[in-house]
Length: 290
Image (cartoon, rainbow, N blue to C red; front, top):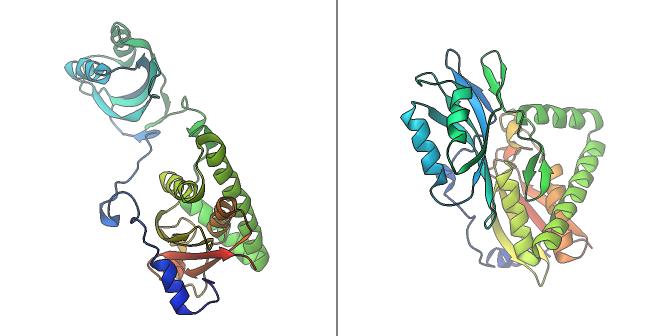
């Protein structure tokens, strides 16, 4: 067994060779800035929402028009599915050096035959321009919410101080149900099973900002797995406190829930390394529950 067996057996699971964590090396990761708020004192910013024809060259035509008018495109979200006729584009612009206002810009964009709709949708509060028109937040047909890590850490710390091990159990069980729900959704919607489903679960957690990961070991026959999590939102806020114990209960439960769905049996997941204790990553070692 991974958790109770001799070191040689644990090392054998490590030798179940897998590709390294997908994507760029850790030091080359690209920060994902969500373009929902712009703070630009003394600048003339605005936000537009477009519905456009989904075909090659459309973005180039729109960008050229705005460039010719001196409009600087700051940030935004473009969304289209392959094969669909329409695409959505919600974005912020800087009109400080432009010869045109936001409403006039929307009018000129509507004149392009590839633009089906153009609206000014800014919500300005002082020097802040806030995107309140893009709702709900979706990822693969599932609604998502964003939480501030500092605020979430404060809640986790309160739960830890107030309920101690009882709070840990609540967090684990909450994560367990969440992990099962996500993995079952991957099976139903995308036909993903086994290692593919588990690795998609980990990749989606990375896309949502939970952590980056390396799947070190995965053995479908023995139903064991070893996962390394980097930059865990649950543990990294406590790195500087000199913790003596591991702190990952919610994410450990999520990993357990995903693996229970993938392997079809109750799983035990132990955190053997933790960034809150000063380790370089959080390590989860999973095996069937006795």
